Length: 250
Image (cartoon, one colour):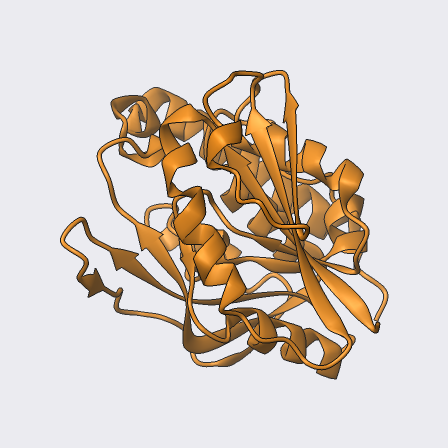
C-alpha cells in the first residue's frame, strides 16, 4: 500500500442521522492503486445518540470525548490519524465523485503545496444545489493570498474550508483547528495559507447540506459581538504566522 487518506468527521446528536449519506459518498470515491481511505468519526461528547448511526465498515472508526465543539472533536481525532493526508468531511455533508482522488493528485504532484480546497455547492432541502459566484481560477493559491480578499469580502473566504484536504504534518504543526466556538475551520485555513501554498480545484468537491439543525444556521453563529471577536483572533493568528516568516519546507 502506498498510503492512506484519513477522513475526519466531527459529529453531535442532531447531525448523526446524516452519517449514512456521508458514508455512501465516501464508498463511491475511487483512489489510485495502493491508496485507501479511513474514516475517523469523533463525537463531540459522550452520548448514546450517535453510535447507532455509525456505519458498520472496517474502514470506519468511532471515538467519543468531552464536548468542546467541532474543532476540538476534529483535533482529538488526529490522535488516531495514521496517514499522510487528512480530509475534512462534516457529518451532514457529502463528497462529490472524484473529490479525494483530485485532492490527492494535486498534492502528490507538487511538494510545495500543503493543502487543497475545491468548489462547493449548497445542497438544499429539496435536493437541488446552488453555487457561489467568484470562485478563484483553478490552480495554486499562493502563500498569504487569502487574507486580503477575506477581509474585503466581510470575512468570507474565497475558498471553502469545509472542503479542506491537508498534509497531516502541516495540520499538526499549526495546531489543528482553532479553539473558537465557531469559524474554527476558517481559522485553520487562514493559518495554513499564511505558511504554505495551496490548491483550488474548480470541479465540485463537496455538497454542503443546508438544513434547519445545522450549527451555522443558529442565531449565536451570527451574533455580531462574538463574530467580530472570532474574526479578530483568526486574523491575528494569520498575521502572526506570516510575520514570523515560518513556512512549510517543500
